[in-house]
Image (tube, rainbow, N blue to C red; front, top):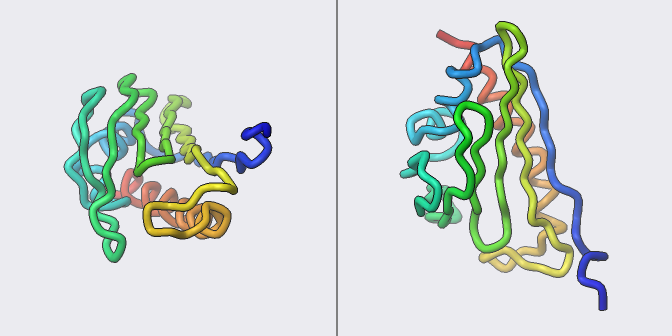
Length: 141
């Protein structure tokens, strides 16, 4: 059976922030920055670094840095199935930020036993809110 037929589309959120690319990079590629708008963590911008996101009621979620291309791209594996990639592009004095959450499969369950199909919808809405929080963080003083 062809396993690709059950792959669900990536969650993809693109926003333009009124902030310099370095400021946005610091918000997406440092532990302090990620904690300010996403989740408490022990991230380090080093390929292969294993870290945890503190997912509140879901506990400590294991992650691993897979790409660092400062200040343009950071990616990490999240849990057993997902990859989060954040791509930045300088637009004069603004920064375009695209967040991609991939690894969705209709046949898989999360570590907590929930089907990807159900979680994906919640996460898509969650990422919309988180990207707004990121915007407020980088556009604030």
